[in-house]
Length: 171
Ligand code: 3AM
Image 1 (cartoon, protein in one colour):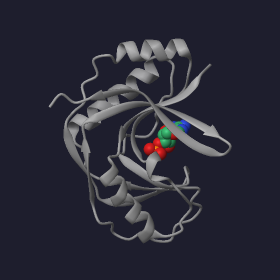
Image 2: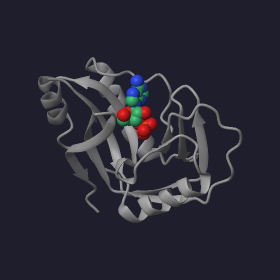
Image 3: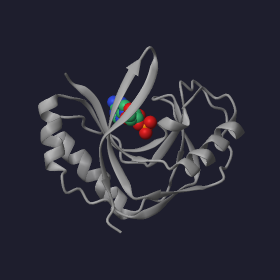
């Protein structure tokens, strides 16, 4: 059976708390993403079969995770996706390279092919139809030291994410 997979960076509990404060500050813009679902997507892979998944994990067995900080410093509304996120406008080169490598590998192996450039963000709301004006946010700095291969499932309308594999940075 195929699973919907993506590579993501997890958000620590203290940073989840900081992001909840942003949701409280912004109010009722759309469906509030629960804190346990906060993540920063590096590469969306789409539906992946068991054999594709095994091959993918084997190819990325030695994935090197950079150890760095990323400051999320602006709200973004992606109208097509109907989401509001806290995003970063300065992407560390090591993070950009990692996202690009994962995305290139996915496209090369018949998985999802991203058209838009990597723009690091954490989604705070889904189902946002229209946004008038978003204020300047209080920045949130994430510690990046882990990458997860996540499975996304929708059960009775509820979206849940489960980590299948975790890679941690060495330092
Ligand atoms: O919440 P974010 O944006 O970090 O947007 C989806 C979500 O990331 C993205 O994959 C993550 C887990 O679902 N995603 C879903 N469908 C997508 C698509 N067709 C997609 N990204 C690009 N293209």
